[in-house]
Length: 507
Image: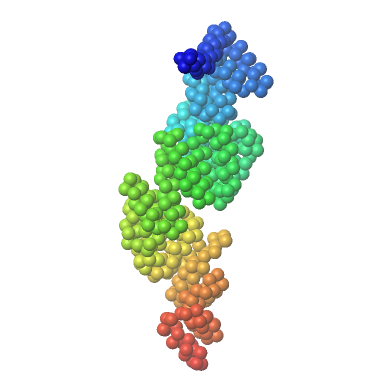
């Protein structure tokens, strides 16, 4: 009885498998029959009927068979590639574009290669640049070659050229894809407002395109609207799970939202999917550094330093890791150790503005060495022109180093920036004027600083000296008296304040 039960169980277990195998064999035979008995044109007609009936899967299958059927053309392969791309089948679309390019010539070849290049870029593939170059060689005036080349130029730092070429593609009727390329080029050039407008125009024209959605998400994040960017990226990844650029941008968005643990997952997926994408590999490190620094912000500086020390040992050539470790060391006020890491960071990457700034800030604020602070702060301010934080720090260091004329120049430019809100900048500018004996110029900027930081005794004291220089006894008594009430102890100021309060005139 037990034997029969075992046999019955085996039959029940193997029957479905046999049925599946039989069904698959039947499908293969049917597909082979279709290829052998239908021409490519007939299969294309069949695909059209499938699409009209809403059967996208059937249409893809018919076009896939048509590519290898009698009378197959590159145009059929191109059509299959576009259809697969629209379905989010990125890798299969890239393969189909490659097949099409191999069968086509001239403008059609340029289109296939251009479309493939853009998709390879989205997929995080290093071949995108060479595909764009081949597309341009096939059809220099083609819309898709121009779109692909614009992306390539933006990636290689040729932002102005990328904008020009993308605008040309837009004017040539490139539609949403050209608008997306324009948005990417404008973003690379630093014009985020115009980039956002271009991306939104592309999305309004065709919501199914993933490129402009990723680009818009990047602009939103960069402009402080990371929470608005996340839903866009969720939609992209649901539609196109192979979009490496979307995973990378999602990691950056989650970093901006202080969710480093979640960001690591997205960055790791991107790096795994695009093994040759150096940007994706670097992003993984960036996220690991951010995760460690999150522990620092939560008060666990020991854990942060431990994690970052291990990361540095694993990645000794990473300036980003060394900057992160320096910040953890600064969390426990170890300026000397931080300077060692920051010096190495800027040696590894002299163009790393954040590292240059941190090195200068440590020298200025913790080591009280403004002369040593000036060179790295000058480098940081030059690398990011218009950065108010960097300019303010540089101006303050220049005052401390007694480079007063240069300090006035830098701080005047900084404080004139729109929405400038740093009391330190106005205070340092006032200090420079007082040291230059330009007391009349010093008073308004110091008064501005005092309204922004009313409890800062040094600001009131410096304002007092400005009034003293103008021989304004009432102004001196008011400002210096405020400094005294806030605990200012510098003996020279207090001595003169006492004498003026006693009725002695300022000479």
